[in-house]
Image (cartoon, rainbow, N blue to C red; front, side, top):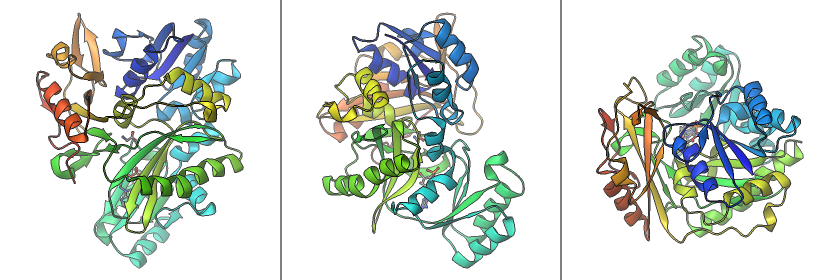
Length: 418
Ligand code: AMP
Ligand code: GLY
């Protein structure tokens, strides 16, 4: 099969790396890809959000299957467009991807189907939002409705901070149209875990749980990022909690989407908070998380192409998936200054040495005159396994040691920031 993966980050590198191991995949392409992906797939110069361009390229080059990994093209209906053109595609259609693209939609869905989540109200008028914040008091959470690159969420410690956030979103349009509707939520407490689940519209298969580290600096301080590192599985996600999540969250969610006429096929991302009242949904995403994907796929022994095919064909329940009995840690090496201002274009050294004891997934890299250089905020995801979580973490840090580039920044407490 000739397979095209859409996207250009560490997540897409991990997907390509895993697909490359499948005997069924005879040709592997990635649009637009990056410097690391180019070492195992043919990179294609089409933007991930260019729906028409992607369909055209996939058709002209006779792709047998397309994997749409990032949120934007999913929300734009790339899977719908590919399927309509007769090209099988992995990922939810736009009407199901809305579970990530609209927080107002996902909160309504949870309310209607009694799926545990933070109490909330939705507002389109600033004065009503401000009144509500005043009534509820702090701490309180203010969220822009649409996709805001993970930055449209303010966990406000004071009423003033919450009101300022609402004004910035609704009046100053800090996140553009994303902020014309805001969701204001009760503030939950407890450890956060991610569960990525394969879904075929009817069945849902949770992968080993994982945990992201969203803040830029050690001790969970600093600005929110796309994710500075991930571990799998996190110790807090006990078998008892896992069973509650299946019964109270995963199965009800997949059934709710089906009942709404929006069957979800693809990877459904459950962002969960393990609160004193039990597990609750913080957010849904309509795709693999990055860097959770890198850690979790490193543990998969089964053929990823078979899984993608089964998700699309509704036969996920017939697969017997196998996972390594190990733990994984993905340590992100970022450009200094990320997620704010950072410089790029710096040569990266030590990749070959690091690759001897870990898999180094590339996120923001490019190839320039035969040399791999930095080209983004998150640059690399050094991913190692271990018999225990402690060993996986130690192995990832040890493997990353030889890697260096100007302004390199990473957290020193991945998997240990409690
Ligand atoms: P989201 O984009 O909805 O995942 O929110 C980003 C981050 O904000 C989450 O990972 C949480 O750490 C935090 N957060 C979001 N909603 C809440 C909430 N209701 N209570 C506490 N923290 C929250
Ligand atoms: N790592 C969080 C996300 O991909 O949304």
